[in-house]
Length: 253
Length: 251
Image (cartoon, rainbow over all chains, first blue to last red; front, side, top):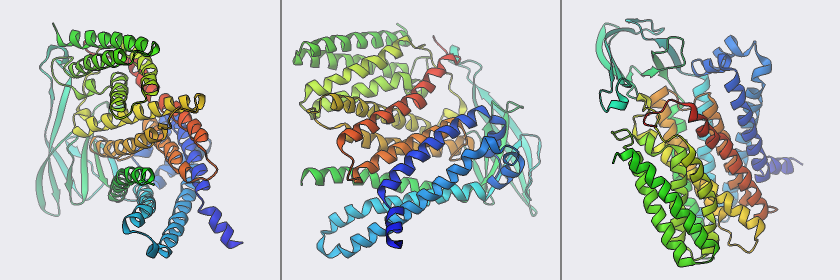
């Protein structure tokens, strides 16, 4: 009985249907996010638990898809984990009958699944931990952290040529004097060029949709970042190796 | 002649050459089909490259704008396929989706959206290259699936197209995540665009798993591939079409 439940939970058929339902859930989510920006835009600026207290709690009819998404992704995570464990165990028992290259090829989907799990965990970590503060750009930045930041220079460059582009924004640069525990440092920040200071990353953002319609600073520490990037990059590299090899082996019988 | 005029003129000439190639294909004149198609592709490439300098300075966003870049990618893949395979009847049938997307491009405003500071990174360019190329793979995958459903004797190569589309789409997601982090301080944003990309990725991840299901034959895969392209078309291409209302420079 337990064995058949375990088999069902790790089956590829369940993976396929779960992925389809997750896809549908995300598609529905995209329409809710689009039509309720006042609820969901702040989700980018708060940790999930803080956002839920401030916005989610009062709008249960608009955020139901978030719970179904977490449930489905959790189920997908379990399904992937069980499937991977089973596959690795099976392949290890047959290892001595297999050529090393064939063994590695057969193991690759399991490695891809491990990367997927790392990536999924990274997203969860990013959502519930770290620092995520968006503050408007003012001469004395009111950082909610033990860092005092003072803007010492701020300017924007506009295109001067060609004629058609004249007056369009090219780049904005802000210079800061940062003080922490008696230490002082001057740092320069521009759009697309964040800097890191005491484990925090400072980003200059141009938010056309904000009420101020201008420049903002995002101070961030994202502990999930490395997991997501590592997991997804290795996943892609493994796929780039696996599928051509699989085609070659299939064609060669 | 201004470079913008070169770009637009070459686009129309390329369209004309592809139409002639299609006529030759229908009349089963293989060599003439090849000649017109290759000529059309050359003109199309000139149009696409010169579009990069449409407003006087180079803009990768202009060069890689989905509505214009997708038909070029479709033509490029068709050409690559022609070099690798001999099944001309099946390969040149791809002229039908190519001409449809080129028709939309020729009716679309030709001017470019002004470059924004957030778009001026190599990651933004790489993102569009991989994303639009993935869409082209999905599109041809869906087209060959359709052919397979109606002419079961046709060689089955839609599956490879969908798999390569998924790999390229995944690369686009990695590169796009880096761009998003640099430009908006987050690898993933709770926005319509990001959620729809995640939805598309999950759908095609499901498709990839079909190969491990014993009850799934090629016809079922073909149907899933077709459904996948409808999702891509609605989420990505229709959103490109919505950009028609944006302020444009040069036309």
